[in-house]
Structures are given as structure tokens and as C-alpha cells.
Image (cartoon, rainbow, N blue to C red):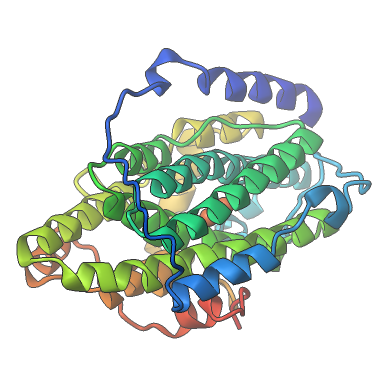
Length: 363
Ligand SMILES: [Fe+2]
Ligand SMILES: [Fe+2]
């Protein structure tokens, strides 16, 4: 199969869906002035200083001269859970390689679209958070996210493939962007989306064979670890001071956001978890969708595709749920909702704290 000719179709579709009138929202949110310019002298100020010191210019820092062959897998196939499926082993080598190239492009496209969402949420926090130091920090995050959009757009351009934004990711970021208070924006982005991203970046860093993508991912990940830290060190004390009804409102928002992510509330079949972009990946790889899902079901039934390879991170279990639990957003009321929805709660902080503490790569 000619990967490049398929790629250009994908790219056209990808850019087209990002330009519809449905993607423009009118949304009034509180905008907070402050005239107390004194910096906080606490961990938020430390984080702001770290963010200033760790700014980087992708033009200077990344080896853009490296050629990337989009027809060759960008990640080590052994780390791809699909390669463990018996069905997958029956495909031809070229089909497997094409699938890996396209599914990686689809994932990188989600990084790109997600970064645009992060850019907008960080700007939103900058104007709506009432604290001066938090405003300055949020401005550094806005610049970080601009850089992330730039580097992923440039990398996707190198492989000449951009897949559309996954509907669940768009729904999650839209719920965050159109929420009614900055605390919810931070819960949706700095705890949930960035927890998800940090795990996905860690796994990409560990599995990619492309030197450019490896270095790009490492630098993005270092920025993201600050963003996740901000969700904890600024928002934790804010949540602790809220009254019960307000905290419950935030906890419920977090539950709704996690539900979007996990697909709770919809029929939890394999097909329902798959988005149109992934169906395009299968079509571009010449794999029949029915055969693929039957193969995936067979592998799930046999317990083959449940476990991640060593060193890879499970974003929900290791990063997102512990972050929500740590700031008191798993209240008794929402705990019941998680249980009813079949979403397990995890509160082991070890991986999260290691990644926040300047060790952006999981041990
Ligand atoms: Fe980012
Ligand atoms: Fe971020």
C-alpha cells in the first residue's frame, strides 16, 4: 500500500474538520483583575520561576533536520498492544507496518489537537484566576502550550498525516473550556487531560525509535510535569477552603469529565470505544473492521491485551485518579457515582509524585 497517497487524504480530512462553525463558542466566564502584585513566596512562585528558567525554543533545541519516513513505524512494534493479538500475527508484515504508522499518526494527531485545547484553557486560567502569582504562572503555561502546538504541528507535517480530533477528547476539552469557573478549567485540564497526556507522552518517549520524536516528547513532557504540579499546588489549597456544596460541585464536574474519558454511560463494548479516526486507520491499513474487532475481543477474552508493557504508565490509574483523590475531589457522594459507573478509584501517588518532582520519565 502506498502510505503517502493515503496520508494526503487523511491530512485533508484532518484540517477540514477543525474549521467548522460548530467549533466557535460564545461563553462568558468571570474575568478577575487583581491589584495585589506581590508574589506569593510559596510553591506557586517556585513553579513560576522554574517555568521561566525552562523555556526552550524548538528551532534551536530540536533536530528538525532528521528525515522521518512516514511509511516506517515510529514506535517499537513489540510495545504496541495490538501486536500481541493472535489476529494481528496473521496479517502481512507490510499491513502491520502500515497499521503501526497510521495508528501512531492518529495518536500524534490527538496530541496536536489536545495541545490546542491546552493552549486555550491555560489562557482562560490566566484571565480568570484571581491570584497574581497564579496568573503569571498560567501565562508561562500558555506559552508552553503554544510551543507544544507548534512542535506537534511541525512533526505531523513531516509525516504528512493529521487525523481528526477524537470525539471523546473534544467533548472532554469542550466541557472544560465551557465550564463556569476557573477551578473546573484547571480540574479538566491540569488534572484530567494533562494526567492523560503525561502518561501518553511517557509511553511515546519510551517506545519511539525516531530520535526527533524522542527529544521532542521529552521536552514537552518536562513542561507537562509542571502543568500537572500546578493543578496540585495551587488548586489543592483553594479546594480545601471551599464550602461543602462548592467542593461537591467540583467533585461532580471531575466525575463527569472522567466519565467522558472512560466512556461510562455508553454501552461499553469495544466498538463503542472506537472513534471515526481509528476506523480510518483500519481502512488506510487495509484491515477489515469486523475482523479487527473480533480479533480484539478474542484477545481481550484471553486476557492478552490487558497489561501494559513494563515501564509504561496507565494514565487513569497512576496519574489522574490519584491527582483527584489528593485534592479531596473523591467525596463520599461521588465515590458512589464512580462505583455505580464501574470506574475504579486509585490513590497511590508514587508515579504521580515522581513525575511531578522533576523526573518526567517513569522508572
Ligand atoms: Fe502541552
Ligand atoms: Fe500542558
